[in-house]
Length: 349
Image 1 (cartoon, rainbow, N blue to C red):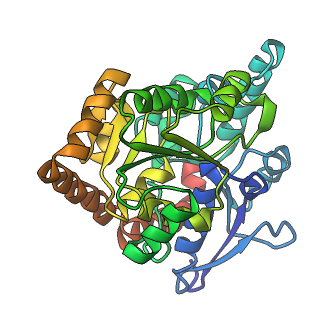
Image 2 (tube, rainbow, N blue to C red; image 1 turned 180 degrees about the horizontal axis):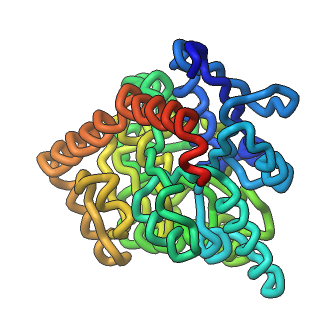
């Protein structure tokens, strides 16, 4: 490093669309890495500045062109595969699907390094022809300064805002309203537990091109009596929603590493999550898992009616929060950036 700081230029357009996890992950990563002031000078979206490392958080065509600059080390985030963005998230017309898929993989291949937030995606990327040596796993991170318990007074105030009884048992779902998020299972589970209150924080970030828009819009406009759809919630208010919540319910069919899990874990909120292989390594068993409306219903019934089980899974969420601490994740970024710059010619050969 020639006894100087590394200049890192972060590129992202994720914050142009509200209510999506990619934007939250981007903001948290930039804030975290910026703490290492002894090693890095971090700037955001400054194409006129020379940089040692260019880190691309989104797959914009202009960013693809910027990767022609081989003086810098080019790093790209992998937040999705072609299958995940086109199956259950966005409605991509048939003739365009192949073009979009090819572009995504070309973008990933153009980078010197590809960062995944879940190791389960590494073999999937290899199937697309991306060399294993280019792929590095570094998990997401959520600040404890922003997401932490806020106390009973703010809990009650948040419940009043949404018309929720102060003594209600609240089950929270969060994320874009789209098919792959399992919104239909969320609502079907709520129908079977009418004595609990279900809240979905999120909306249609991409409007009518969202997969399943018509059906999901009908559900949002006519929910069961015990279900509240808040619409898109500013991220700074999400801590209030977690604070008023008893359980986080994640029925998604496909994810990488939802930011909602880390955010809720910081408040030690127990979790009921669909039993997907991709969670097994990153969450290390610290959650309740199910695979159907029937199973979700039973798990939420147990949590809401058995105090000792509820306390057990509060502790499990605390363990997740502790493992994904700032020190742990920042140390991974420090090691990666320094090695990527030091050995840039080796990785390109």
